[in-house]
Length: 313
Image (cartoon, rainbow, N blue to C red):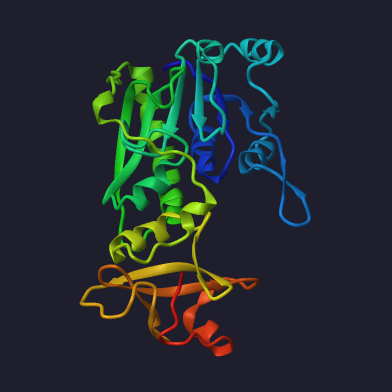
């Protein structure tokens, strides 16, 4: 029987919760959890507790929320834990080599893409935006680069036409927890050989900006369909009708010739909002008017008719 590993878990958002839960239910010992400090959010500026903090506190696991992971005090605190392994899942900051080298087995990360594709802060969103039919998670050995470490274990899943960044986050979080447990088991058995990434195949996944959501209707419907889904739930895709901004969700490509100018409303009924694009049309089934909640188009039309022939800009 192998000795349980002493593991430090570093992760902050909901994406990290399935992995932490799997570790807590597994054979190894989570000696502490590190997450980002609580942050103010919303109009009331209320402090939001990271989801991993909630889980750690419920399990009685020691919790650390340092402002910086690069201070001598923090590094000394982690060194005193006598770690075998650090597990990272969407912690939110780049970790220094001085921390990565502390555990006997180093640090491994659950990255939300099939590396070397989509290195960076938003791999899940960019996979959807770019129309990928498949993505996944990669359990990787961490180094000081941006997702450049050796690949230990990839796990792939499909992306459907109905998937959004939000649905893929949820799916990949579960896959990440499962892949992590398999990787740790094989790491202890010595059956998890690292594989170098082919840097020639690397692509970037930079942080998203709100401005990305302003739709250019001269693009083809398929590209817009992917962009809307990839920006759902944040920062979301939008366009203007006159002075009013509308946000779009739940799109569907409608193939066929288009005679109206890109951005023109061709139909507005219980089925949705059919908008002309540079190629084919886009049926938007959920919408959010400025100052209102997201709803299906039929519900919006009950109180806010949208004129056929009107044009989004």
